[in-house]
Length: 186
Image 1 (cartoon, helix red, strand yellow):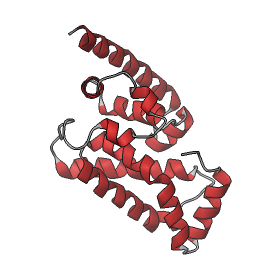
Image 2 (cartoon, helix red, strand yellow):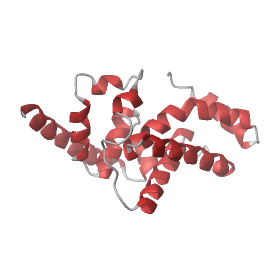
Image 3 (cartoon, helix red, strand yellow):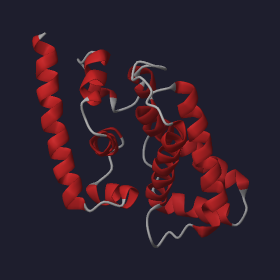
Image 4 (cartoon, helix red, strand yellow):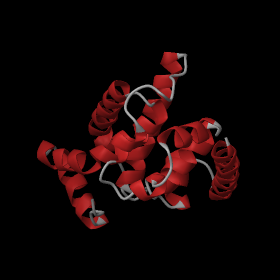
C-alpha cells in the first residue's frame, strides 16, 4: 500500500479529534496491517496479535483528543501506543510464547513489499535467527527493515536516542549474519 501523504493523515486526524468516527475508521483501515504486523512479530500468536491490535486502536481512539501533531507524526504516536500495549501484554502475561505458535511470518507479509526481505530464506531460519536477538534489537530491526521507519521516527516510538539505535541495529545485523551463516552450514 502506498503511503498516504502526511497532509491527508493530518486532515483525517483533525476530523477524528472532532468526533468523526468515520475519519478514524479510515485511519484504522489504513494502518491496521502495519500495526498488526508489528504486534504479530512481537507476540507471534495470531489471536493475541489480533486482540492487542484492537486494543491499540481503542487506546488511540480514547487518547486522540490528547494527540499533538506538533510533537510527532501520527504514525509514530500510533506505533508508540502499539509498543506500549505489547509491553503491557508481556507484563501481565509473565511467560514467553514460542516463536513457532500462530501463523507464519509469510502469512503476515503476504503481498507486501517486505516480502523481499524474506525472499529466498526459509521461514524457520528467519525465526531461528530472530530468536538470537534481544527484544530491543528485534524491535529496531522490525521498525527499520519491516516497517521502513527512519532512525528519527524509531527514536520517537522507542524513546531511545538515534545513536544507540544505530549501534543496536549494527549489532543485530552482525548477529543475524552470524546465526544465518551457522544455519546455512548445518
